[in-house]
Image (tube, rainbow, N blue to C red; front, side):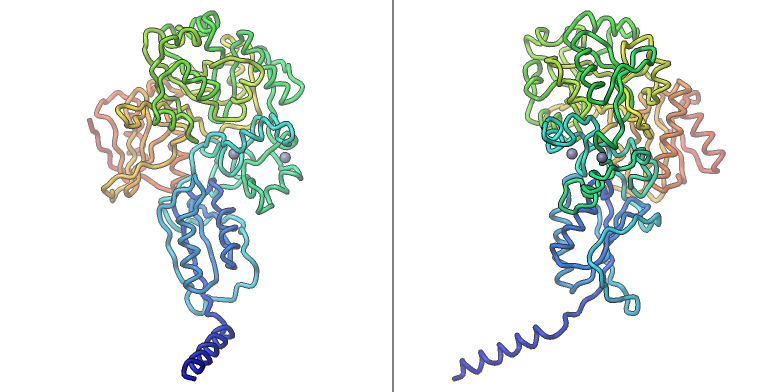
Length: 518
Ligand SMILES: [Zn+2]
Ligand SMILES: [Zn+2]
């Protein structure tokens, strides 16, 4: 009898609980880190839906994301746990701040969860946009799938891959503030962009054959030789096998490409560039091909195939000369190798059986890489046979990164594409925002704010006027993205370095103290 009574009371309590309306509160959640341009909003959208939460998510002008949700404490706690644990692979969450809306501000959220139009307001510091991301496996599969509508489309990307740093004009990250703005989405792309179940839901770089930037092949006089994007890339791929030197416009600048197998074309490129000994970097067909001519450790293999896809300095294997021309890196036991990191690169291997191309930045040593199509036609016409172009503007120039594994440690020889503008976190927090202008050759500048050091992309040799113009442009861009103003400048002690002169000029103009260091 006692047992029955207890059961009756329990059942009643349960029924009462069911009928009491649950106490719902509204929470504002600020997420900082790398959370724009990495598929974060679509992720939050799907996550909120799976937690039955109403509310919204919005990109802010400070590169952070703000989420508003309505739910009970427990529900929201579990939601936040999932944000931490299930975030997209390229997102980096530094901090999640949660604030409950005060009484009076709270209102019942009636509509479902949605992605709100981005806001320009800046509410916190410390977030940054992502670097350019190498082509992902899903996009690579679609690129070579004859049944896919992006079959052989050279600018194939998704929320997990594609250019970011090199196309963003300003924040918050949305197509209209990137160099994709001039390419209006077609109906089919728009359908994918607005479909929460699609892997290109809210992918800002979404494009296809009918609406994205087209590729074209031009001869050295600038006369177009191709009838379509597919035709342009196919022809370029065949011409490379015939020994042509081609200027290829990529995401962050122009490369000079030619077969790395034939002595004739390699020595011709050396002669035309006036580079007698300096080693060239190569782009190998794939990891398996690389293993045929270079030793590669587990760590080197991991880095080479990572989403960064940097140039890895690898040791040549015996028999290397049978696959790669000895003129590529003469006198050295190492070779700089990278793998295709865009659809365009992968397609260049499609119509030939070449093991590797020379893929070197199109510039005189120490000068900035050529980024403008007209400038390329002018400056490179005496070096190349053809130009493989597209008509998307390169907002920020960015050279390839060069990485070496020493012992078992990743060591940067050049920290640029794929890493910049991600900050390096240091132990001690600075109470000043410091600009360090760098040395004279192989310059990068650094902006230190709090405990984050933002290093610029590779700038080049500061003794050239063009390089310093690039320096100023890149500095302005970083300042805008980070929303910081230096309160202190540091420069080299050498009085004649162009970086010292610029630091002195900035110090006077902005009335900021200057510190010379060595
Ligand atoms: Zn992708
Ligand atoms: Zn389209």
